[in-house]
Length: 285
Image (tube, rainbow, N blue to C red; front, side, top):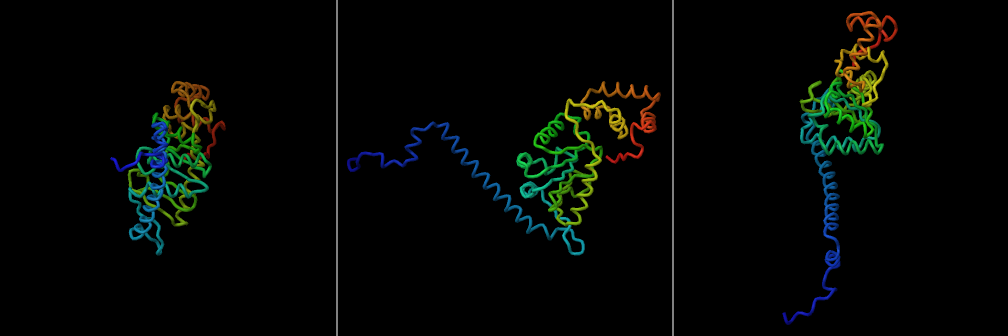
């Protein structure tokens, strides 16, 4: 139009000029990075808000003993942000007892990444008891490997006591129905109950079996007999020891020939009599 003068560099905002000469792909990366940072902040704010709402809403439905809140119902939609909050405020150790890796609040992908990152950074230690049969499937072995790579201290038990996680001495998140991983969850913050869960976990962890790295089997006959004592199937023993099923069966046959016995029960008795395994060794795995 005749009344308008020519456009000069002063009329164009600096960020628009920069955009004209920068690489479009690079600009998109920067935009995405800014968006991701914004989302992380918003997620943290929303998690805090959810936890605050939970704090306000949980107490009326809580179980009490002598006026003290013991069990607080944990709605499914609140569980992931609450677990994130507990992980982010833990400074010493998380004690985790798992019955399943397929269901439950512990399977939230974002929380898994955050927890593994904090373990890797040395923010706290995590000890976990897994069911023995987790080593029988490739998804189970992959799960164990991913947590081992993060620095988790791992053991397996034939019968883990239940499903729960203890965060320092501040809280326990547990299934509302004992040993039922499909049940709802509860939050426990009573110090005496937390201490009882901690004692149960520490005793169970001490008696559970350390997970043998894949490909690093042992030739210890006493360990083989102890695994037989626990009633493990040959397939589970092979997984645990990191050797083939044929190797397990060959070693068992050799031991039976050595002790002159016909059954595996007789093998256990003979091994105990000769001192290969201890008679008073507890098997509450």
